[in-house]
Length: 65
Figure 1 (cartoon, rainbow, N blue to C red):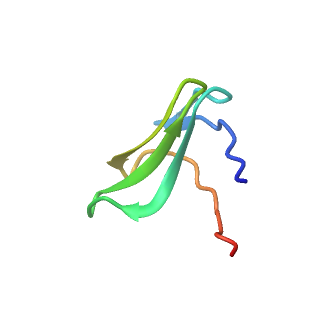
Figure 2: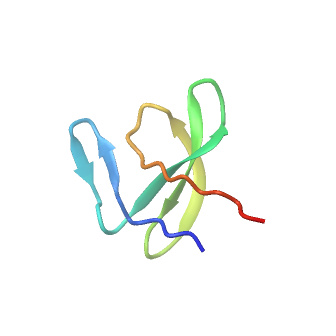
Figure 3: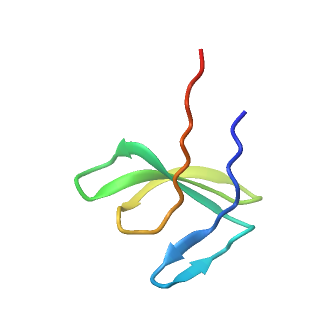
């Protein structure tokens, strides 16, 4: 099991949606300027890509076999 807190995101000097949304970077790049990220809320979850300059959370997850 992996625990990902709903840490929200940073945009400019503000932090938004803490406690209701989670946005986490993936290690997989989409292009030279953008990367995939996981977005989730209480209603849904999905992967999308965005520019790397957004302030999203990072969480180390290791596959244990």
